[in-house]
Length: 95
Image (cartoon, rainbow, N blue to C red):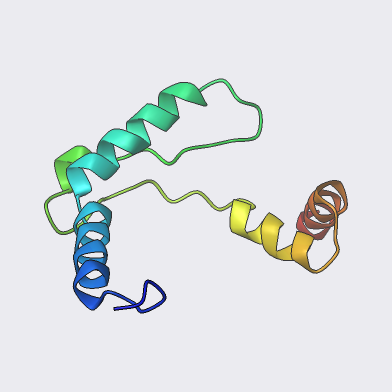
């Protein structure tokens, strides 16, 4: 078979592996705590607190933080608005 053809078995195995990794909530909680430690003193980055006692194999309970998200910033950047302009505009709208 030519190398340009997709190996469906390999694609399915990769998809399965990604799905299992993305739904490994113990690993996700570990990652959230890891990044919380790294960014604990950062002036702009905030990692939501994880409530492990309320989390289980099917859900991760986290603190809700109403702030500007990275996806908001990137979305507006793609539209041509700089980070500083976007932050300034958001702060003005809150006032």
